[in-house]
Structure formats: C-alpha cells, structure tokens
Length: 288
Image 1 (cartoon, rainbow, N blue to C red):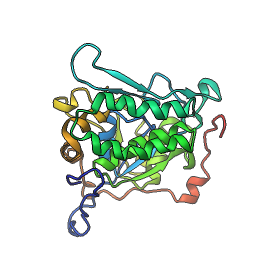
Image 2: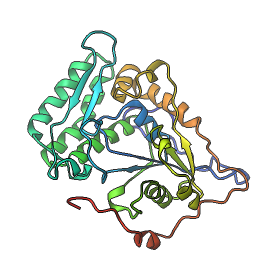
Image 3: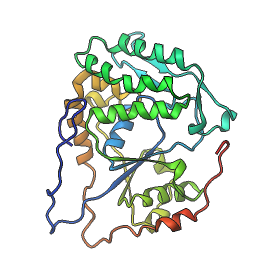
C-alpha cells in the first residue's frame, strides 16, 4: 500500500515477487461491521488481504456496531458519541444483519451535522464530506443497519487505499462452534494467517486452524501518537488529523510488522473444497 488521495488506488505490486522467495502470506481478519470503526479495527482490516464481515452474530448495544466515539482532543466534553438509532426485530437475539434503522431520515440529517461539528476545521474535511455522500445516500434506500455501517468502513478503507476483498459470514458455510467457525471462515479464503484481536486469544483453540495450516497471529499496534486512543476512538480522528496519505503510511507500518511469508518448508493451507464446506452445518439465527 502506498500513500494515496481519498480515491486513488495504490500502485500495483504485480511482478514484484521473485520465484525463489517463499510464498507471501495471505492474511484474513474477521470482524463485525462497525460504524466508522476505531483505528485499531481499521488497522486490523487494512493489515489483512480478506475482511470477513461477521454479520450473523448477535447485535450488541454496548459495542461499536451502531455508534462511534469521536474527537479525542483532551478537554472537558471533547469526546462525543455518534450513534444511529437502531431497532431489533428479534429482541436481544437479533443478529447484526437483521438490525434495522429506527429513524433513517433523522439519522441522515444528524450524521453529517455531528461530523461537521467535530471536524470542519480539518483541512481534510471538505474532501471527506464529499465522499460521505456514498454513505448518506444509503439511508434513502435501505433500513438495514449493517449496510450503512459496512459502507462507513468501506469509505475509510478506500481513503487509505486498501485493495483487499470483502466477504460476509452470513453467506459462507462454517461449523457452529466458535473456534471451528472462525477457522472454517479463514480457511475458505485460503489464508495462511488469521489476524486475531486480543480478546480472541482468550478463547480460541488453535487445533481447528491447524487443519487449514493457518497460523493465529495476535494483532498488535503502536501505543503512541495517533495510536494512543486507537482502541477507543474512531479512525476518523486520525484521518482528519493527519490526512489519508499519512494515515496510509502509518497503517502500512503496522501491516509490515506482521510476518509476510509462509515459513520455508511449510505447505500451503489444506483448504477444504467449496462443496465440502457447503455440507458443513450452519448455525441457526433468528430471522435467517
């Protein structure tokens, strides 16, 4: 990934690998769709070649699936929450993909107003505000929260020139158990590395991943500068502070710290065929 403007794709790296080098790792990240995700979340996705949108797990109101924390500037009242009013047709058991916008018209009006209140003084705001229409227009054509929040993430990914692939867990075959499910999803991409957040390390079993020759690697990021609040605050703060080119470089540093080659002597992942994966039982969710 090279420095880009908001809408410029990075230069191609085709032909840059020589045949005597170990095959480059293919990295998979799995994460729920979040509204203008935190810098840590964005960095994990940018570090991956595949983002599997985990859209068929239970919606959590205390998480970041329908809200984002803005403006990390120190001082009283500096932190603000941007929230989208959400309706859950199946109550607390509602999966993310079934969550609905409670008041799309009001949300469409308030979202740019609140963002402007926080960031209009940034030199990068005018260009970002123009690109924001791709998200705002969705409020007119859908009431599905996940569509809007995923679009907000795509907007940030485009801003920093990410060129990976996006898949959705709700349409992919996988076993129901937690570790097996994540392993199946990662294995379906042919990934050699599963990029795991700190929370996942506490419960994941590595055995299902070994079936696919997928390594579990903890995602780590710096703790200084723009990264100091990266686990709490939306990546919008960093984007509006240093701009897309500089943010792209910072994200690349994190990506480059991940092992980027399959160790010599290791086989490529033993990926199950698609038909075999289709035959795996899918977890049942309300409204599916």
